[in-house]
Length: 86
Image 1 (cartoon, one colour):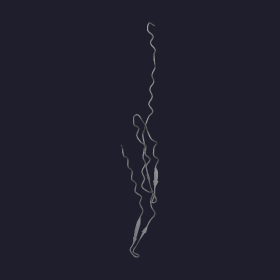
Image 2 (image 1 turned 30 degrees about the horizontal axis):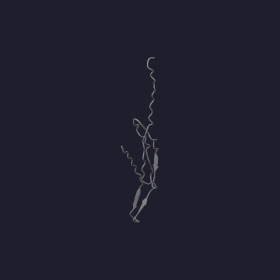
Image 3 (image 1 turned 180 degrees about the vertical axis):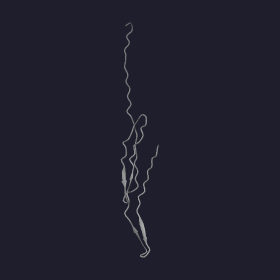
Image 4 (image 1 turned 90 degrees about the horizontal axis):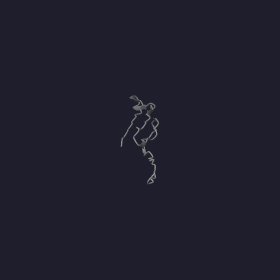
């Protein structure tokens, strides 16, 4: 199990107005979680890449599970008939 965590921080400005004793907040500045491409593993089918994801003030924490599956196995064989004396 390899864990890969990404964290982004969105920010906004805040101005303290001492005359009115209020704080004035600016707009949020969105961020982006980078795309992720899982590593190839021998004998396994690699899951698809995870695209980049925009993050803003309405975004929730999220998780993405990537599942590797086994590659189909195959075997070839030949049967020979032996005949005595030939």
